[in-house]
Length: 243
Image (cartoon, rainbow, N blue to C red; front, side, top):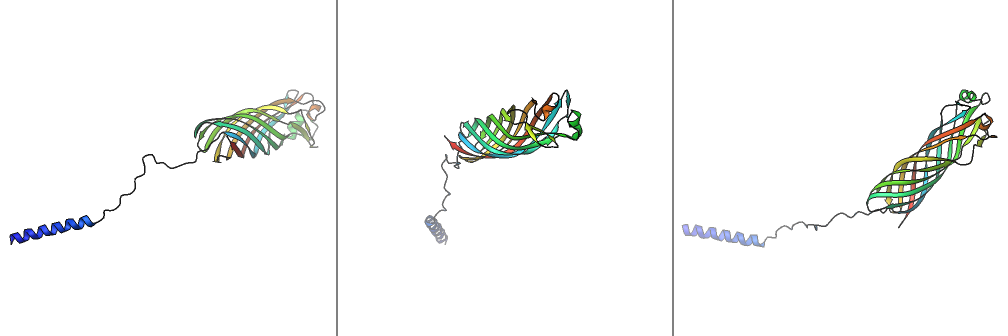
């Protein structure tokens, strides 16, 4: 009896081994190669670009005459125009160097109180007003690229027209030819592709003080001068030709 039991156990164990050999093992998941990584499209920031920009300016102006001033009064207005520039950047991450210029039409204007304007010698009932029709800047840009993102600082020269008038009657005259000043600021820019970017920037502009020549509205005062400074926030879209 004992021999029969041992023989039965050996038969069962052997049959199990045969069945197990016939079963297929589950497939192992594929192992990616050790050098595999997701493919990202690199952005080349180097190249010449042009585009459009638009924004808003908030600043101040002041009229002075014979040592008496209106004090700073507010100026504001929209601006829109075109941009042209060139960038050089090395790789997906690193420093960027560039030069950028723009021309904007401007609707900047503002006026003092009547009391402040009369206080410097203007006719009774008149407010002193400052206006601008255009703005040009030429700036260097230095930034750092994080693939699609650029953070930059910028600074350079600016030029604008100074127009002045008494309100009423509200007629404006140019004080001088183009007035030179300086500008500095910074911003961020995003590249949707090698050829298309969008930016948001802030610029501070200071045009100092200019004297009013005789024959102009403010030149009818004894020794009048006008000062102006601006703060600009604007956005832009640029199309780039990559080299």
